[in-house]
Image (cartoon, rainbow, N blue to C red; front, side):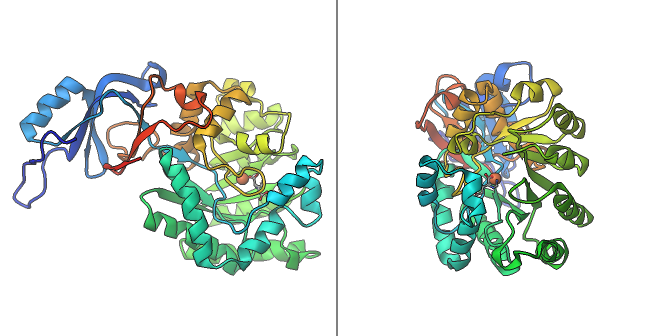
Length: 423
Ligand code: NIG
Ligand code: FE
């Protein structure tokens, strides 16, 4: 509740102090400060024009706020973290794959289903058949679930259209979501996800289109903030992936790679060689691949929801990644096939319980390292002066609770660019 609603006005009518300040909070800044979680106790966070303007003690904030008649919000001891960032989703799609879920429980493997024309191809058929409005409507529900858990930025990949018009439509829907909702969206053109039916027997023809006019068209329309490719035995070879990454590089588009989800075919090394922002999945990566990621400063995006859903038994080499200094992000991978998951908090739990991350690494993975994976670390991902005022308020006693609980949502509010919204 604001204790004061009067703000000093300058001659142009704009406030010349802070816009508002939250006091009496525990901050998990996630910035390097020597404290676990970059914690600050009995602390305050002030915002101005959608940015973090000041961080410090509550007492000092109260003094300054009184002098400037700035609205003061009593955070009443809640924890405030950076807004969560889901840096890997495929959440705009039509249909669902619940029948394949049943098939897999009956013993079929993900690869068997994909080779038989199910899997990604079945979602491509459903997504092509869906209207823009219906794609938008189902995606809004998924985004709202993420937002209710403190997500303020998310990445959305295409990859379920696989022809130019359908891919454009998915990316336009992703952009429209950010237009309608307070969340910020980064879009990724996942040009190499599966070979579409109409190109069966003509892989080169598909590569020519994707690496040529399609990529140019999508880039020229400003529809993609980055590109991605599924480099895997059931998808695209390293040589095919390389062609696409090189074409993206010529257009100065940042790169993500689905690497080592089911087999190690050298995708991590390839991602590193092309200066990818991130290599994602990484259940199967060699020590040389880990070294290459470290040397390139490439973020390992861990996706425990997919590992869990596919009932995999070979987790990513977290100890090696940690030791090599590879930054680790955690994301939902929200998609109908391998991770029908709209809870980033659940992904944090699974990153700890299934992959062995600490709760602090998991939270960093959905804040600071997720921002790094999207190339946005200078702008968000930690609570630091000058960064975007995107943050989440939590009714918890310790930050580790965010990774501890299964199915709880202690989010008490979300602030997007300095504007509070209740949760
Ligand atoms: O990240 N691996 C490729 N892409 C998705 C799965 C897509 C699907 O099965 O529909 C993933 O797991
Ligand atoms: Fe994925």
